[in-house]
Amino acid sequence: MRKIILPVHNFWILVWLVFLATQIAAAPIGNDTEKQEPVIHLTLKSVQDYAVKHAVETRNATLDIKETKKKIWETTAFGLPQITSTIGYQNMIKLPTTLIPAVIFDPDAPEDEFLELQFGVQHNATVDVAVNQLLFSGPYIVGLQAAKIFLQLSKDQLKKSEIQVKETVTKSYYLVLLAQETKTFLEENLKNLQRLLFETRELYREGFLEENDLDQIQISVTNLTNTLRSINRQIRITQRLLKFQMGMPLAKEIQITENLEDITENMNARELLRQNLSVHNHIDYKMIITQEKSLSLALRKEKSEYLPSIAAFFNYTLTAMRDEFSFFKNTDDSWFPSMIAGVNITIPIFDSGIKAAKIQQARYQLKKIKNSKRQIEEGLQLEYSQAKSEFADALENSKTNADNVKLAEKIYNKATIKYKEGLIASLELIQLHNQYLNAEASYIQTQVDLLNAKTKLDVVLNRL
Image (cartoon, rainbow, N blue to C red; front, side, top):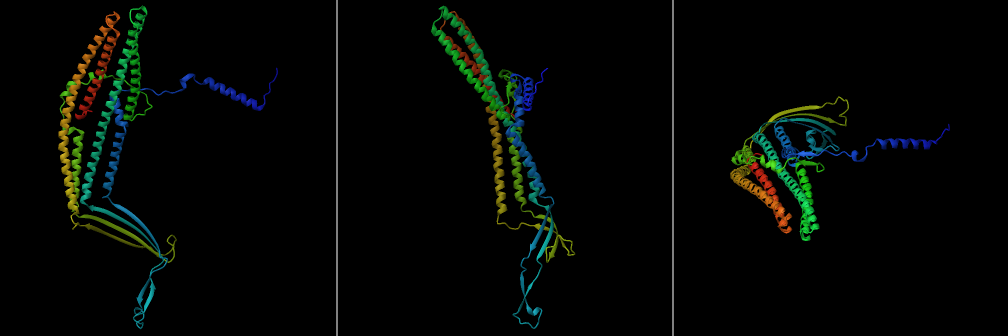
């Protein structure tokens, strides 16, 4: 048996080739290596819930609440003990000179003679600890109450943002359904037209129809095919818009699991029309009430500026004086302590009318918000009447267009039979087909209009 001896470098090449071959053999074939993310199936409820959690508007409103809570603590902490410490050091590079009459030390000295004396040491250090406590302040007490109102304003704004986000994504959701329903309808009609085109071509070959009839059908097939391509692009655009408004990554694949007919059948229109408006439960009215409370407290705060404020303080100070810098050395030199405690009472006496002017401004702002409150009450009543009327009109239009679709389909089906029997021309058939398409498109649009009108009414009734 012959022995084959490989050079060292050839041996390692062979090992590498064997390893590479095993890796290739173990690797999956085709596109199985690509991990595809699962399609997210969405209903209207899941779209609204996802948007409330992930939309930029609601996330920012949630952060506003957290920020407001920190501001409340900032206001509260202002009236709690404040402790500060100060460490000071002075290097008297050149001691100041003081002139003293010489007669103080020498009675025989001339009166105009002065002695030049220097007092102090070069190095001075102090350590001071100060404690301040607010005992009474009218603006502080009112400020604590106003901080809670400010927190309620932030919560109201979050609720408002949630309603707006739900309204926005709901309308976009209906746009996606509109495009998908239109696509389904057009696909069915395209199949019917293509079948009719095939039959027309066969009849033309047999000599029963003219070439013009075949061309008319072909034009309709081509136009409907182009329309379908446009609808497919619209579906992609509306889906991306919906994902953007929901706060969902645009790369995610979504699929709508509902259709317009199911939603309209389950909306219970009669019950909705019987609902009455409760202005006091509407978020806009709640927000204006909270703003009114806030401005009332602002007026109280300005009035409280006339009250005295009382604060207590305590200071503890250590002082050291050295001829040389030896503060950190173990020496017998002492640090001299001093302590002081007291109370400061600040009493406003005269400010040339500044406080009075601020009080009047606060009163005017409170009057303006009361006027706005009455306007919002009347505006909500008007908005409710309009929304209810629009919903009733949309409901009637939807029923009318549904009947028109059935009638247009009936006419077109009869015309198709007549066309195959040679009783009508292709041009008349195409016109009736277009009439059927327009009737169906109008019906789908009125369904979306009905759902949008319902959404508007839900917002007014605080049902969204």
